Image (cartoon, rainbow, N blue to C red; front, side):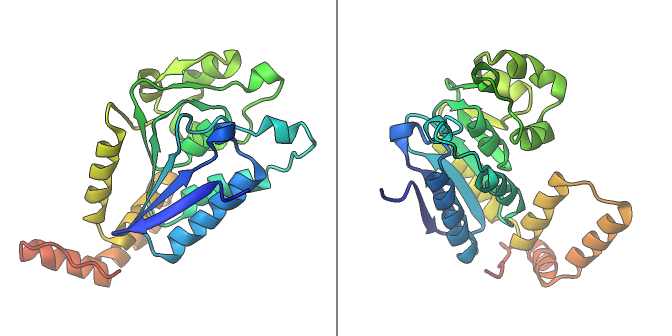
Length: 242
């Protein structure tokens, strides 16, 4: 079996593609191992932005139930994948053009921005097979209040993209996902790499005021901050160190 995830890096953008359409990009042990390898490559290339996308028709159907039914229940690789999407320095954009189910929603929600095609659907199907959406609740509750999730969690019912936007599960709903993702990438490339990394972490965890003060002062006096302020004063594009 070949690789189930591919990665391509160009112009500071790493595009990671889930490429296991035969089983609807289910979260098998191999797919997760290949995803970690792709993230390694993206980080080694000092990518400024990471795009997580997929081979159609499905973004990700969740756990590989065929594999799980054979006794493979170690979720360590999945937990690490969710953690890495949040911890990697570059902002991560999920580009979603197909349905998402169960654990796949958790993978999507672990990204910083989520752009989905307007006609796709979602469902937390875990209760219907006698399990619970345990691991994925971490990144999902970071985005959504529990009361907005309760019906979908407890019933397993299908819901649409506008609903996902309304509850905070996704950040953008679009007819042309690629166009929106491209624009987001270009806008992010205008920012300083260290500033983007710091801002990503501001969004992801609580900080004390002394920590925020120290971060602000360190960024204003950094090489990148000085370049950004000079570029603003001179009315020119900033020249960020790669």
